[in-house]
Amino acid sequence: MVKMIDVTKKYVLGEQVIIANDNVSFSVNEGELCVILGPSGAGKTTILNILGGMDVASSGQIIIDDKDITKFNSKQLTNYRRHDVGFVFQFYNLMPQLTALDNVEIASEIGKDPLDAKEVLISVGLKDRMHNFPSQLSGGEQQRVSIARAIAKNPKILLCDEPTGALDIETGKQILELLYNTSKNFNKTVIIVTHNQAIAEIADRVITVKNGHVASNKHQSKPKQIH
Ligand code: ADP
Ligand code: ADP
View 1: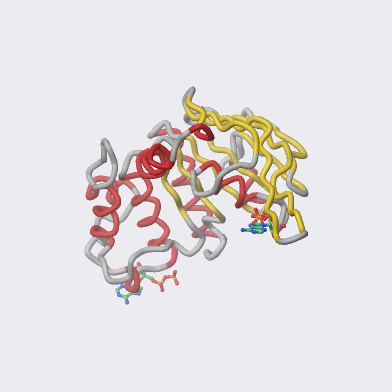
View 2 (view 1 turned 30 degrees about the vertical axis):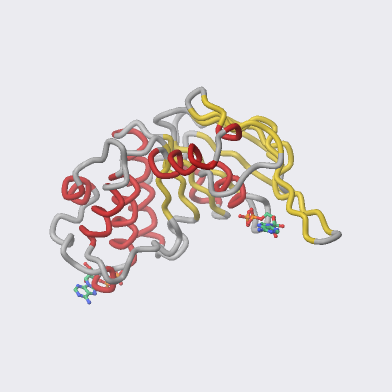
């Protein structure tokens, strides 16, 4: 369970104070795919960075499986980031000099209870491409490698920032389907941030953010099929 309680994040730039997150509260269960939807500048990436332990909240609580990560010291936060969270980015962020398999293996090695890198690559549909370098793979395939990399360290939570933003519509649908299946088959909490309304259709939960605050939070009991 991921729970944000009254989380506020302020950035102070000289005299200027920017409130990126304004009393944000929501929770997402295990096995649930949640889309955080909102326009550019709404505060989505800040939410993701705070949830992932890459940035710290100015106030509020972030409960991950009964532990408040805002109380963590820097060592605990590093461990949390390494073991409990997987990240998926818009532009994949793969290491270009490593094969798909090596990209996944070096990530899985930092996990506490990692999955087999080859098996994970097979599960994302890359059985025949694992010895290719990123430059030899299509965008959709590179995103599959990056999802495999995130899954392989066996984290509780997958945090995805515009994971289909660089892909065509059809390839994007396949990636969303893979993330949806990951939430269900691996019982992970999957959180996707996007400005793309269409992506919200596949979510179990849709949280809309505007000007740093939660404008709506809807559970969808029957998310639309992707196809
Ligand atoms: P989104 O992901 O929805 O586009 P962000 O979370 O990136 O929004 O940004 C929310 C607000 O916080 C914006 O006004 C942005 O300029 C500001 N912001 C984000 N990161 C920083 C930072 N490191 N320093 C100052 N302001 C920031
Ligand atoms: P798309 O344009 O549909 O994203 P690409 O044209 O990039 O796809 O790739 C189509 C197929 O060819 C994919 O399976 C991809 O992995 C493969 N491919 C693309 N570039 C290379 C390359 N340099 N070496 C080997 N296979 C490649």
